[in-house]
Amino acid sequence: MMKKEFTITVYTENHVGLLTRIAIIFSRRKINLESVNVGPSEVEGISRFTLVINESEEVVQKVARQIEKQVEVLKVFFNTDDEIVWQEMAMYKVPTKVIVEQVKVERLLRQYGANTVVIRNDYTVFETTGHKEEIDALAAALEPWGLIEFVRSARIAIIKASEGMHKAVLDFEAAEPSEPVVENEFLDKRDGVFTM
Image (cartoon, rainbow, N blue to C red; front, side, top):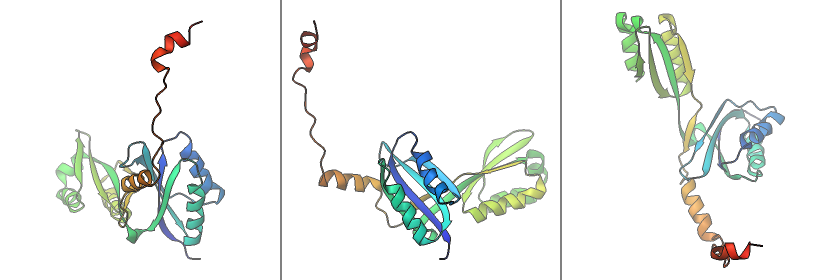
C-alpha cells in the first residue's frame, strides 16, 4: 500500500468537542495530521475542517467513513493534490536594516510575491501565499539575511469538482423538508395558564 498526501474535507455542524473526537480517530490509528484548519463554510452554522495526512487510499477511506459516523458530521470528502486548489499562508519577520541595505533581499521578496504587513525600525513583517515548497524556499532564502521569525498556516483547499456545501444543503432540504413550525395556541395566554 503506497502512501501519498490526501486532503480530507469535513463539513460539520458547529459543536464543541468535535475537533477532539476527530483527532482521536487519527490518534487511535497512529496517523499523523500534517495540517489542520477549521473555519466557517459558505453555509451559516456549518464548519469546514481541512485535514492533511500521508496515508494509503484504503486507510483514508476507512478514516473518512469513521469520521462520517459522528453525529454532527454532514459530509466527508478526501482528495489528492491534483483534485483540489490549495494554498498556505506564511509570515516572515526580517530585520528592516537588511531590507533597506540589501537590494538582493528586496528582489527576493518581490520574486516570491511577498506583501508588507508591518514596517518598524527594528523589523519588517512580510506575508505570502503558496504551496509548502514555495513557502519553505523563501524561508530558506531569507535565513542567511537574518530571518527573525517564520510562521506558516495550515492548508486551505477547495475541491475542483465540488459544487460546494451550499447546494448540497439546499438539495437535502428540498428532498426532506423540515417540519413546519407549530405555533403554541397558549403562548399569548401564558400569564393565565401558569398562574396559581
